[in-house]
Length: 363
Image 1 (cartoon, rainbow, N blue to C red):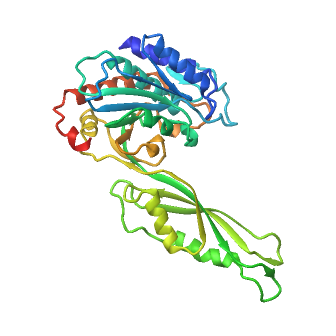
Image 2 (cartoon, rainbow, N blue to C red; image 1 turned 120 degrees about the horizontal axis):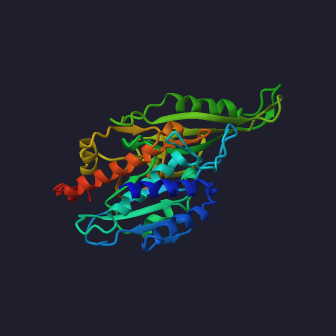
Image 3 (spheres, rainbow, N blue to C red; image 1 turned 180 degrees about the vertical axis):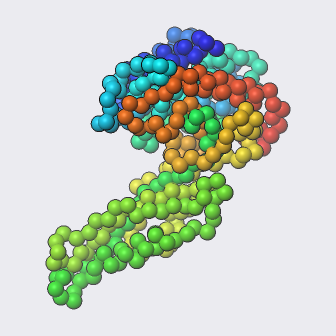
């Protein structure tokens, strides 16, 4: 176990030294690929996504995906340390991406290595280090999933203090355009697009979706940007505003969009509806295994690559603290990584030992 933990920390330190902003992850992809190849494991690569399968992969068994991302945001201007210097001080590992989501990325890699040669597994494992998570890009986990075959479950590595996020809200953004007719502001002419938009803005402010999620609460809609007019004496012919919508397991994004279009008079243009809500029942056997190990379950307020995974259940779980993500002088405790590896292993070991007839229900 100690060697797995040391290898994980060493890998994370190496990755921190390599710039890997979203869409620029080619060098970290190479490093992860080499990490597994040096251990005699065959790797697969699609764009900047790397994946490996356990040695005794059996297509007749259910497959669990271990996934995290190796891209990072750009360091903000408040950094006082070198974001690409993986310094360890007093048990704290500093560096860009150390917490989000490097700790989870390398802990899941260590967990995969622990089970790689096991012959008694009732399931397969695929470990995937993917790109473009921070921008919800098209060339990350979404492009990879069709190449992985049928998946039974996914563990998405994000900083959750090793608790289990069984649900997270979906997200989509719409641009709304109210159309009017221009005219001189001094005369009774034209049709003011701002006034037309106000009615719809008020609807977004007050509308309540009828179904309320037990874990995620209400669908939340917020008008966040508004633009109209060119000069003070011209009635504006167009008013455009932007709405941020956070959906729950009661409505996928397309369903929520249809309801919106039925109620407003303005033109509605969705930017994308790809980032859907996710939810796994508390009764799922993997969730139950986590609960018996003392893990808390909760609904996450942040969006991850879970939103792009459909057709199978997932939960979000990893070392580190989401509150540190995207902050200056980002860090993770080395002990968090070590314990993360242990808990991932305990979780899958316990799941493997269970009499999982229930798997068929959720497969």
